[in-house]
Image 1 (cartoon, one colour):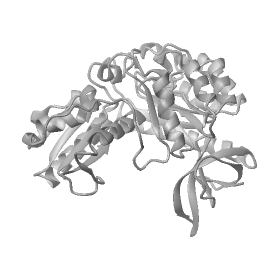
Image 2 (image 1 turned 60 degrees about the horizontal axis):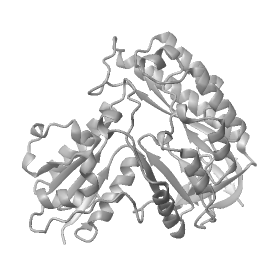
Image 3 (image 1 turned 90 degrees about the horizontal axis):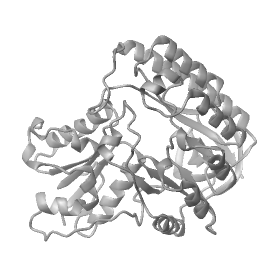
Image 4 (image 1 turned 120 degrees about the vertical axis):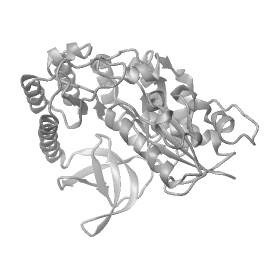
Length: 409
């Protein structure tokens, strides 16, 4: 049996889709760790930023150099942007468009392993989740927002939603396997048709588990949604991309909300005990004044986590009117990262002696010469504990060392 290894870059949706591909080929190929020599490598690429594309392509070139006799399948969002002729060993390189990754087995058999009869295996549900403590369930695909800086809507296509009954079945399957947390993911999950009804159906399931929402855009978050998250079987954490607190930038970016709209969301969610994470883009048409507005917004609002990334032009997107020196972009990014780090530590100090639920993710982690299990709290912070139980564990935070919280029953 030939061997196959997978490299996955980017979002939780890509991780879910890699699992789909793995399940579609397990009866025909032996899946091996990516550190192992393989007959076939699959790169599930990302293109959300230039850095993401570069990382995916660097891996491609590295695999070509180190494994000249292996075949490489290049799929994911960057598969639509890459030029096959740029690669020195194009004969063993096979580009598979994002929408065809669901039938990766047929793609392999047509282009790589012609000795096997072509078999269609097109699925959109995952049965297990390889090497993961938190399985993902994809509820929708595509985005119709077309933010002016973002290429994702162009690469992922129009909105398509998975039927709620299929979502429920997938969740129940993972619960029965003993998973304590399941993550709902997609390209733009807030646009799922009647998301609140789906969440209520999930909340009514008679099991001990929790659901975490992956990133959800602010235009889909209101008090009703926050109330559902705060009171039900949901992780007390929302990741809501801000991008900028300058209304001028938000308008140029085609983001359909204002900084004040976002502030109201954060304020209400925080009062309900929900930790807020966000994304912030640095350098998109951004003046010093725009950056300062964003910095002060983060400083004055209860934002606990943030992914800070610098703007890079992507195909099909708006060209900016001015480019900012890399040294300035780096300085702005570092300032925001330092601010978020301070705010996170302050928040965690306030959380000592408060109750939470955790799931153990990794056993036997050594910290300061002592052995712990690494866990994840409902509020999305990292936890160290001596407890080894699978599933949801109730307890309280006893200490915080600046990186990890400590948990006991």
